Length: 330
Ligand SMILES: NC(=O)c1ccc[n+]([C@@H]2O[C@H](COP(=O)([O-])OP(=O)(O)OC[C@H]3O[C@@H](n4cnc5c(N)ncnc54)[C@H](OP(=O)(O)O)[C@@H]3O)[C@@H](O)[C@H]2O)c1
Image 1: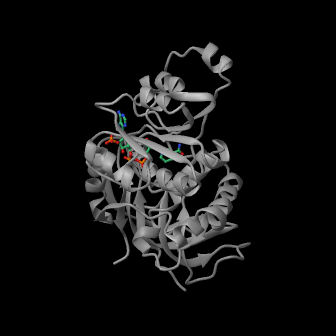
Image 2: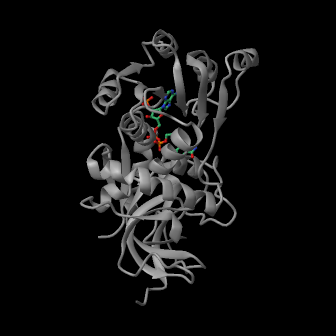
Image 3: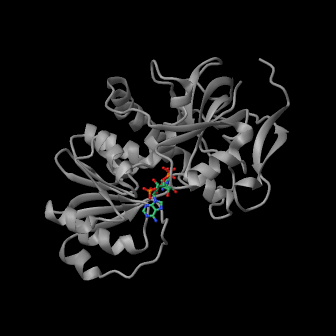
């Protein structure tokens, strides 16, 4: 197949608000060793894209400067050394960047087949959240059946996925969200209880249950100390973002006396091999949850690629529930 040499993409013209996202014509990427080129059908929009746009989350040195960490689409080129994929395969993939474009390059090992019967729109919502949730909740956090699991931001893309995966693993799930309506979404997804963090004290609620064995937190700041108090003895706190700040004063005597673990990770800077390992686990453990209906995509809204600024206004406003996507292929 002969690809055109240039493509439409949305670039970050300067660090700033959503309107700095501008359409540009750029060269179509060329696949390196072990890479595939995907013609993008839909690109997922994630909070880290907004951070990158604002100048607070620089892409790794070898990554595309274009935003976009996940997509669905069709394989249109395979680089040397790629054996799994062929031209025409429908995939969804974790991307090092570059998803807000008609074509994108990514390591072949970071792509997974579009789950049977799933739309390309929903498939674009899977990679970033499934990789992040599985790697932090299970590979790092070690969540086991019967444990009490608390996730903050329960209606975020990450939160909606974490609630369902933890429930499918047999954990008792608790979530926080900013309104009663959002709390209802969390319980509908399988949370045993959801706490409106504006009116309820999640620390007291979890302590009344015996404490959380695992907390997945994206808020940070003042939540760090409260999370530590909400943990059961031997509990684990996994930090994946800091919406309220990365610094806190904590009493490490409590960490020591109650044998707590404080850890965390970000997906994007990890090695290609580490992401390939996560992809393999996600395919084995999470794809069957999609097939059985235990995990469903919670879709918020769809915008055309040219409307990426509107998608960013939406993800940074408090109203959205679940995933936002950009429609790229017409
Ligand atoms: N470490 C990683 O590898 C990784 C990967 C992907 C995403 N992330 C992070 O995970 C988070 C979720 O990502 P996403 O793409 O799913 O974003 P998202 O849908 O925009 O979710 C953000 C959520 O945070 C909640 N929130 C915002 N400000 C808050 C505050 N001050 N206190 C409590 N909750 C607050 C919001 O819920 P309410 O409206 O209910 O407050 C919202 O549901 C982001 O912070 C993102 O940067 C980390």
